[in-house]
Each structure stands twice: as C-alpha cells, then as structure tokens.
Amino acid sequence: MDRWGTKAWESRAGSRWLEALFEKTSLAEHVEHTLRLPAVEYADDIRAAAAVIERLGHEGLWPRERLPRDVALAVFRLEEIHALGVIREPSVTADLRREIEVLRARSDSLAALESN
Image (cartoon, rainbow, N blue to C red):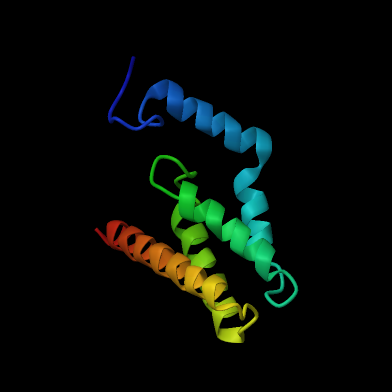
C-alpha cells in the first residue's frame, strides 16, 4: 500500500477514490456554482456550500487545482453575507463569524504555501 500520511486520503487508494468521487458527483463544481449565487436570496445556500469547503477544503482532500480559489471565494461570499446583514440572529451571526475566521486562516495559509 502506498501511504504518505496517516489521513484516510493520504494513500494511493484513498486519493484515487476521492478523485473518482469528485469526478462522478461534480461536487466541487456544484459548490462553486452555489458560492456564486446572489447573496441576499441565497445566503443559506452559500453558507452550506462554504461549510462543505470548511470541512473538506484541505490539501489532499479537495481537488488541488481548485483549493485556493474555492476557499478564497467562500471567505469572500461569507464576508459579503455578513456585511449585508442578511443574517440577523445573534447565534447564527456568531457561527458565521467563526466560519469566516476558519476559512480566512486556511486561505492565508494556502496563499503562503503558493508563494513559497
């Protein structure tokens, strides 16, 4: 077994399985499409798509060529929703801010990796 790490996707078989999943489901394309919808009308959909990026948007798990762009787009759209005040419930707004911070930190670290 070719393994280069301890995570489930850090093996040849796991990596191939994930590639097939993304190809068969068009998951990454669906997430990007949703992230590009109008913020006011689709705030909850955008948050759901950003949650997929938050949970799956890691090196080796999300398609490599899409990862920095998709994470940055998720941050931008969540920040837009926050700035527009589309979501007003305090507990949901607190979660939204946390999601933004998690994704912003990941976007910053991906940008740093790309610049090296």
